[in-house]
Length: 128
Image (cartoon, rainbow, N blue to C red; front, side, top):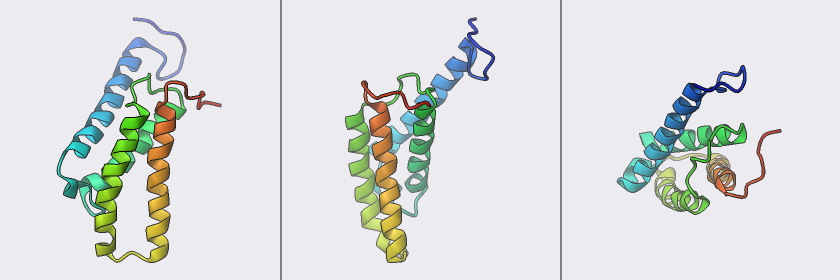
């Protein structure tokens, strides 16, 4: 087992565990995107869990912990198309205020876009 620092993620076991976590997050998003679109609607579990997963993946990438295991940017942007179509179909049925709808739409787009940028092979380092 290799250890290269005193940090919580600075050894082989921790790196292997983190890789499994990243793979799980990516795999669950991929499965949700390949599933029934209704599961991605604004009031459904994956409608909330997918952006949460993407945010976690982005934070890990920003901190340098994604290990190159993120999906390609074009995959992330494809996910955005699928997700946003379901969200747009469903959000008005929840009767949000126009301000909330616009703010939430912007947050969702930013969430997908940031991850796509982080996933680019030539992405600049996102840490400090």
